Image (cartoon, rainbow, N blue to C red; front, side):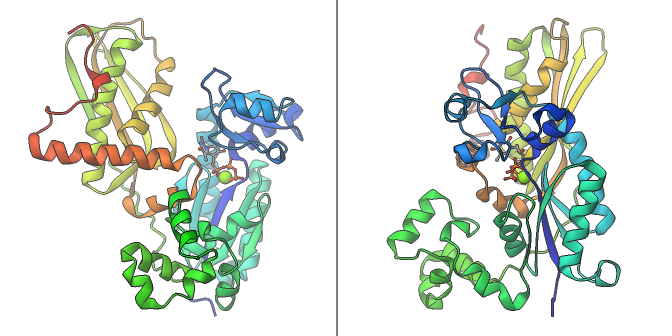
Length: 389
Ligand code: TTP
Ligand code: MG
């Protein structure tokens, strides 16, 4: 008996797969998505490139050394975001309870839908078929009774995976896996667990409960996960509101260098308010008002919902080339929309390149504490200061 049916769906090599579909000459070839600039990084690699050891967050230079015959394609965020919407809409044909986690993945609560779609395996297969037929793209799906197990399952047989874990098989499924697959365990945590002689999820599950508890709240949390317990529900209530920050400037400005510090200040402000209310934003909008009072806005969805100032700021910078910055502007604003509740953020810990976001987040949290004590003006990032002042 399945008390709950949860699917986790995650597109295979998403950005690269979109490019291969849009440009048939790239089919079957190793493709790296990212900028070729000296400091560019790989956002993702097609499955043809992965056997060469390249992957997300690696420097483009290194990746091209490892896979010299790869085709490098510059990312087209607007296109990926458009397809992302299409994919999420397909998910919503299957369940009203869909929780997007990033551009290319979501949880679907399919509890009670057996009458319509059949067994969990049939549900997963139907979802994969619908995505392939309607978008030409391949999605990997995990099915389980908890979010955590579904998430691990979708990743296990990528690409084109479909892994179903019935409740009675959860232990047999989880226990042989390395501790790194526990949500919340990064490289540091892995090292600590290894030092304690805990190599697999089964090792953690077999701890004395009192010993697990003595390792603090993280210990208790890992112990619960290792035993297949994860009470989190699929959350659909994405707030429709947005959080914005804008400022009319003392004098008009022009050019990217002049706009940047205002965006950074706004990003700090927005991120702080997101954190205060327990939200992360999956979309961002930049607003510039010209000296003639014309309003120009550009927006995009984020790869991963965030409440980190630096990440909002970097996303905002990617929108700047879409404005004519030779104009003179009297107002600069930034807004975050598509707000998701804090809960799903732990899943970032599964991802490559996360440490950096976690690191930034710690910096932001420290800034929050200072803001709370000394008010908003006391601490500013040095780069935000106007060099001319
Ligand atoms: P992922 O789902 O993590 O990766 P993927 O879809 O490319 O490959 P997989 O088959 O393993 O799921 O991320 C989705 C997209 O998000 C990815 O195509 C590119 C982007 N991305 C980044 O821009 N930076 C990153 O560090 C990661 C991990 C992903
Ligand atoms: Mg993916």
